[in-house]
Length: 521
Image (cartoon, rainbow, N blue to C red; front, side):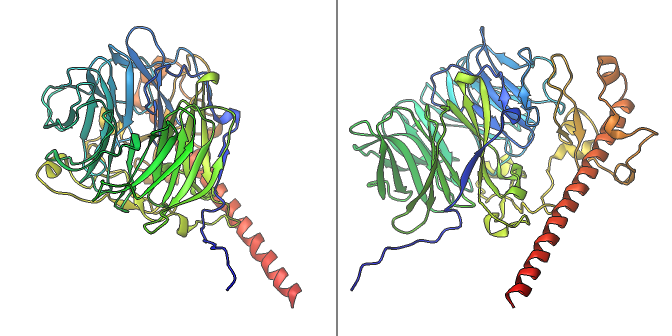
């Protein structure tokens, strides 16, 4: 009997990384020089936030995702902390809400204006005071609205209900005190019913987050974990860290039995922390090393050998931290399945990096875009605290079938929050002093806005410039609304042109196929 190699077919075998061009990067960003092993960057479909280096207190920068190119060195910042900012995270159910934690032992939650940060933001929406030492990590609950977890150098994990009416919240709804050293990472499973942590005491713990009960604990002498990650619904955990011989190492665990790892794999002898990122839709695992320029990616399965190496993206520019775009912000027309935002400190640069599945057809690819988590909470904070667990609300990424953003403030008119949740950002002017404006998203686009022709009020909308002075911008809502309506018309016409271009290419491909079939006969 002859030996035959085992070939495994995978639609993601040829995924490749495509770095953005220089003009599509964010240049001149004063990235923090902090030595903490955090991501330092948070991204959603509207904004990108990055922790910056500053003297006296802590600050982070919030830019429109379309505000590429050279960043104004005097661009306003979110600067309300008295100590260095250590971690930032966007609310998964509100693109205008971001949380930050700092060395000043507080957690602050900020409302970002719909038009971006036009002046330094120093007053938060909520301030959480409960930790006795600096706070190093924060995480939002994946399915419950306005539930935030924080952990600091007091070794406590605290759970906060942001639906509380107080602006300064001093008492968390629960404090988890199982850790004997600094918590290095936190990760939730899909429905948020389990919380995994890695700790400086070399132990991995699985907790019931609502009650704080300890369910599992791993103490592997051969693996010192620094980061831990739930792998979707596979009921497995992945940890990255170092081996007994200080080699960088990955380990795979059964979440119900942490006595012995299912798999251990040494990677290399470098010293930088390994950041794991998992895409539950494609079952792809990405491993990015701090200080490395490369990103390894694997496909995960529920059966042995569990982990299948695909390939490696290589670059000469080392990353200090990484941000990732939620799936609802990806470009499905180019078959993009993941997008990183690399922080390159030596160049003061944020470089978007797209992971793309090569496909010849330009139509929507259902097989690589299953239903994914939407920007809508499955339940309220009170429901979760009462004992209910729910999986995430799902949406299709197919154009035209997206679940609309569901914010309760949408029904309350155009107040500060109502307007904030109904506006989106567009590319802003990158010249110093120029105001960053917004355009109205589909939620606000009414029939009158959609039915107008390409010429509005006797003017060509493409020639309409945004208001440039404070009097023009804030002098009246009518002038702003006129500008937003014209921007909406431009966006709608561009979408029509893009759709027609795609249709033309599809017809050309069909003609070529018919010709080829005729030639073959």
